[in-house]
Length: 287
Ligand code: NAD
Image 1: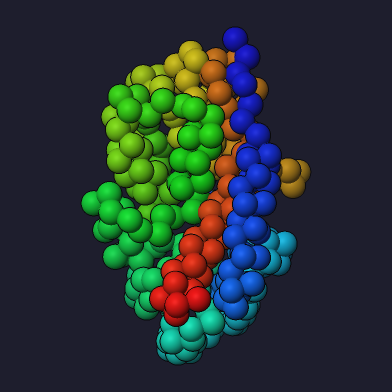
Image 2: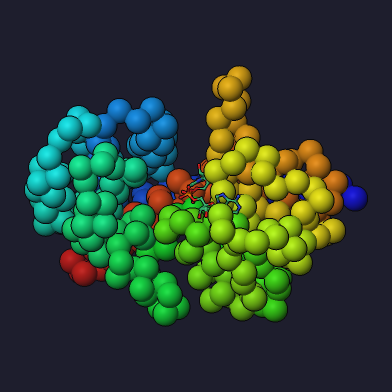
């Protein structure tokens, strides 16, 4: 069997088109959606992510504000900036690019973002709302995965889903979203015994590990949907996922490639959350 490949670029382009239409309609009502992005330090991967986010905003008609700070900046300086952005009615989304340098209390910074502008969905209140299946800003990567599964018509209710990885950014919210959708979810992580025993039972397998080609074809149930969240840079500069694509595609039914799978959906969901926030602000202002 050779798996059908999910085209994340095509889906992202379609959704981004809809987002651009919504942004244009909001601008016509006098409220141009606006995302503020804070980058601390010189992590090259973070700089690329921020650049891509700002460029995607521009293409969608979303205004972006970018604030860059040196690696050794004091947390108070960033907190002051967040307070200003929280209070600014023209700003609808605020994002602090992670990871932050070691002198930062990351949780405190994330909680300093106004919940209504937390378009990354990392504030503890949004995480709590997600866990209770209440309306919330959803973290962009797992939200993008859910959009893909929905677009591909993958049945979720009653499915066995296995998530490899338990990070706050991907693994845990991914597991919560799948649970909320009726899947029976197993979360595997670095302390899991006999990982393959779990993965071979999965109708839906999500890999968010950060290890190149970690999941091989023999770990996959025939016909499964395999979602590769990993982005790993190889010594030759090329990108690869957490799934060994060549062996996995011979066993899976549906599979995402890297690049061109989950990655483009992550930024798309960030744009969508920003437009949703701007729409709420416009309504609240009677526009
Ligand atoms: P992380 O390092 O915070 O978490 C990795 C998880 O993998 C941990 O929970 C750990 O327990 C688990 N793990 C490590 N070794 C394991 C093993 N041997 N067996 C089972 N589990 C193991 O990483 P993260 O932030 O969750 O990101 C995961 C991957 O996804 C990375 O490659 C990252 O670059 C990528 N990522 C992609 C996007 C995107 O837009 N596509 C967004 C965020 C992260």
